[in-house]
Amino acid sequence: MKVLIIHPHLSIKGGGERLTKILAVGLEKVGVEVYVLTSTFEGGFPEFSNLKTILFRQRGSGSIQGNLATIYLTVKDVIESISPNIVISMTEDTVTLGLSKAVRRSLKTLQYVHFPCEEEAAGLEETYLKYYRFPGWFNRLFLWSADRIVCNSKYTQGAVKRFWGRFATVVYPAIDYIFENGPENLGSNRENIILCAGRFTRLKRQDFLVKAFAKIKEQVKDARLILAGYRDERHEKFLESLLNLDMHDIEFHIDPTDEELLKLYREAKVYCHPRIGEHFGLTPIEAMSQGAPVVAYNSGGVKETILNGKTGYLVADDEEFIERTIQILRMGEGDWRLMQADCVERAREFRPERFISEFTSLMAG
Image (cartoon, rainbow, N blue to C red; front, side, top):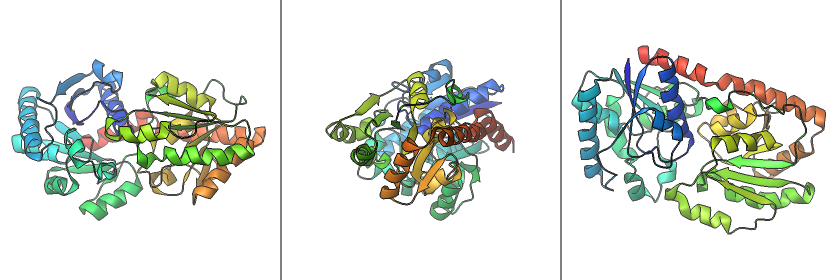
C-alpha cells in the first residue's frame, strides 16, 4: 500500500506535527510505503529526513488563489508519479483532499482532525496563509472530499459534528517512541520541579503559570518552574512577552531535543498544563509516561486522558490549579509514588503501536 500524508508546515514542533511523524514512521514499520508532502521541514522534527518527503513547489503566497494553484500542481505531479492508494490530511485543511480528488476522483481520502477550526489563527489569517493554511469557511467548501473523518478525542468529535455536521471516528493520538518506556528513576524522590512543555503561544497560557508561580513559591519555598517549548514564528511576540516577566527560579528550555525533553519529564515532581479547552493534549501523557502527575483544567480532551485523583487532578479554575499544584509538591512520598505508578500505567494505553493498529484498520475499511 502507498500512502500520501499531507501536512503543510512540518517546520513547526507541535503536537500535530509530532503525531504526523509518529504516523509516518509507524506506517513504515508495518510495511506501508509512505510519502510526506509539506512546504518545509526546516526546523522540524529530524526524523522526517529519514522518510520519503516531497515539498510544495514554492512557499505559501499569502493568498488563497496562489496557494490553491501551488497545491494543485504539486499534488497532481505527486499523484501521477507515485499513484497512492490513499491520501491523508493531518490538519483541518480539507482543501488538500478536494484538490487530490480533482486530480483523481476515485482516490480514497482520510481527514485527521485535531479541531475543526484553527483557534490560534485569529488575527493572523495572512500569516497562516503563508503556511498553506486556509480559513475555516473555505475548508468547509471541501468537506465532501473527505471519505472518512478521524479525530483525536470525543471532545473534538462533538466539535466536528457541531461545526461541520459530519461524524468523526475517534482514534486517540500516541506518545512518541522515545517516551514509550517508563522512567529509570521510577519511585525515586524528585526535587520540587514544576514542568510545562509545549509551543509558546497565548492559548497555552504559559503567562498564567509564570504569574501563578509567585503564589506557589509562598507555600513551597524551594519550588522551581521550568518552561520547555518550541518557537513558533507566528507567535514570536508572545514568547518575547514571556521572557520579559519576573523570572526568579524560572528556567526556559527553548527548542529542546526529545532527549532533553525526556530528561525534564523524568525530573519533574508535577506537570502543569494551563491551557483551557485543550483538544487532546499530548504533553500531559508524555509527562505521565515518565512518572510526573498532571494538573490540568477539567475541560476539553484532557478529561479523557487524566484520571482525576489518580494520575493527577482536573481543576475547575485558576485558584484550584494553584492549590492542586501545591498539594502534589507537598504530597507524602508514599502517596506521590502511588500516583506516579498510576501515571506510568495509564500512559501505556497511548503507545504508538495502538495508534498505528487503529489507523491502519480505518485505512483498510
